[in-house]
Length: 297
Image (cartoon, rainbow, N blue to C red; front, side, top):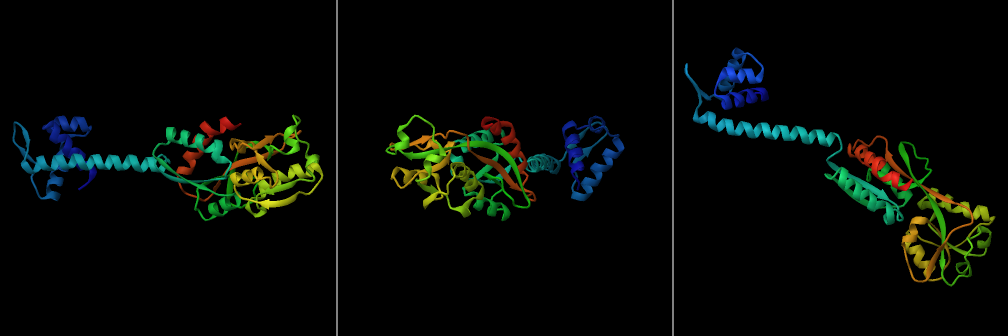
């Protein structure tokens, strides 16, 4: 039994006329009659009562007609779903992101994906840049939003945004009371809170732009992975911290953010493993390019 035989049978069953069915199927009548006869032989049942005047379905034919329609429906559904999966319209993707991305990037991504690829499930994992690179290698995440540049073979990247760095300090700090932007040279004697060096070389190098410009090596008094933790340490007067602009979404009563007297930036990019065969990656990247990236550039 073949799928095209089911289609032929359904058409004859609905037309109850071989000539009209053949015309509708765009084939001649003899091959159509042969296919129906072969189908009956394969099934071992008579599907039609035939005489010179008309064609009628047998009781077995009526039952087989209803089931044949269901079979064709499921085949068409399976075909469409397989195509949508191949095109990345159905499925799942695991997205890695750094702490500051949660403030402004993630809401835009989720909104855009819900509109453009609503049948794709997005699983979120908050990870540092180093953790994301390991997870990409091990295919524990499909796409990462991380600090670049990176030098990892097999990892593709696409520029996301260039984000200005600012200084977070306690409101009691003397530099918090001035209206002037911060000169890096004025930070030589400060105690600094930094992310661990091994958690992201790109972010570390971004921050060191400020120290290099000020002509000093920082006195690192404390390290912390998360933006919230670093800002809380500033509130506790442990030290000061250089953070990306998006961190200013964190508001505490006794902290403030100050710009520098020149621009320093952290660069973030999308990253994915070149040999990752998840078809959702391409559809996700298209949504990012069309709907999300323009809002951050």
